[in-house]
Length: 272
Image (cartoon, rainbow, N blue to C red; front, side, top):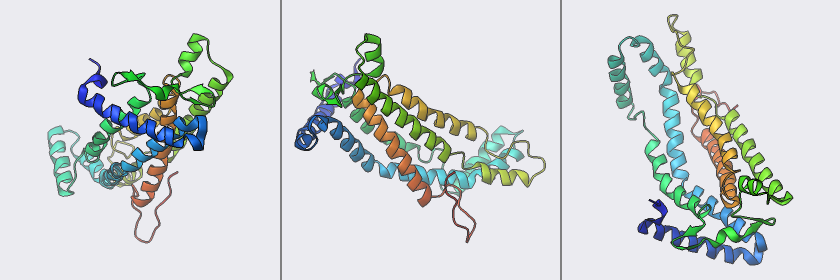
């Protein structure tokens, strides 16, 4: 079953499509042939701006996890032989702090339908039973409905196609590398000091799986660059703006809500 053909979802898509095409027409005197691409950029920025509260919620949850990391690590050290006791003690700690292991997850789930609708506008050739004319527009002569992988496979790739997609993929990969370097496991330092204070600690000083999870998330940044080669150019532009915005937002929120609060009188360290 095509989820996007479900009448309520199709109706929402059609309204969003009409607004997007209206913005494209409005920008045409200013941007000419690049009006559709500029509309994609503006709509993406508008949606990301509306989702800032989600990012704030996630940043607060990350700071809470970092603050609790040393105590959680100590609980794991003390009760590693008794998983049931460990689970009870961890949940008691979360309750004492007025939080939960899933803090920040619910707001993240809320944004999925919004992002799904917007992304669909950039990949679907047909919306609510009519052609998606957005994909017939071009950026530097490259149709927004074309993909790099598809063009190469069909033998229709032009130098402009390779140049435009190459620039987008390179920029996404660059943003991914900056993101990977800037956001390393933040709970490691706090947990490490707790670990070093106990001679019997067997872990390197961080919650099991935390570093691995962060590394996987870092690698996902590069997966986005690969995805950009296979999706329509409209979606690739959306992905570039999205990852760039996300990086900037996370850097700002890291300053506002440091994941590892400094000692009194010591300014918070900037991300590495």
